[in-house]
Length: 245
Image 1 (tube, rainbow, N blue to C red):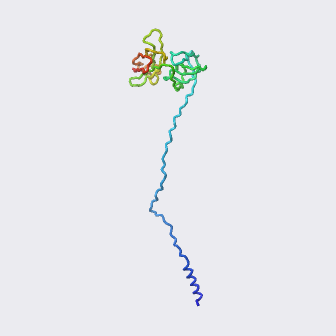
Image 2 (cartoon, helix red, strand yellow):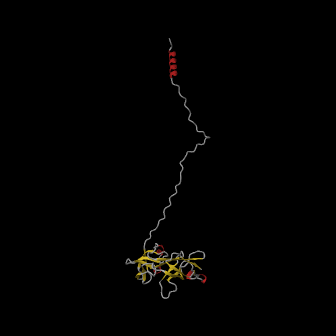
Image 3 (spheres, rainbow, N blue to C red):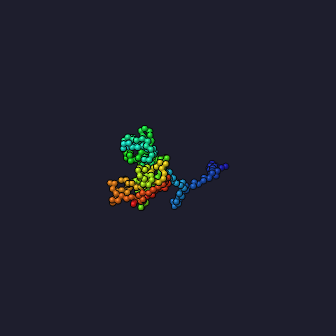
């Protein structure tokens, strides 16, 4: 017969034998201090240029000027060879709508809603006239001439007279034109004008780039175009060329 001690030892052995063995706990992995972490890939960023903004065109706004002479003539087309529409009392308010190429003639509306062309020198000085839109008149015949110096630079403010015929007596039809900053003059004639016309140099404006200060000729020599006089046959299609000397 087993003693009490033997029975207790047997029970302890059975409990120990039946218990599940424990899995040893693994220590946490340690970072290798000598290793370099790999860089993480990043999305490529491409700079997108800002689109260029279109230039803003300032619309022309008609404005008023006044004529500075009594009985300024408003004409149907630009030039003294075209019919007058009315005469203007001094200081008449005129609404500016445009100008001819060369800006010698200004297209206006009178207070009586009459439209027509006025010679620019009969109007008050106004910087807006230089920005008025260019209008090519209809029902005209255009003669253009160009004056360049020996270096090919334009001569501005050079006046020419265009006269019908060659050396005619009396007062044959005539119109005048002055070169602009590009050295070009624009003369407007009726569509009925034909035959031979004389183009002759008449003067140099004080505002010409060939003049000195105080409207004086440089070194006492104002210069002149070559040729001083030439002839053309209408209708003229080619530019009339002059060299400033």
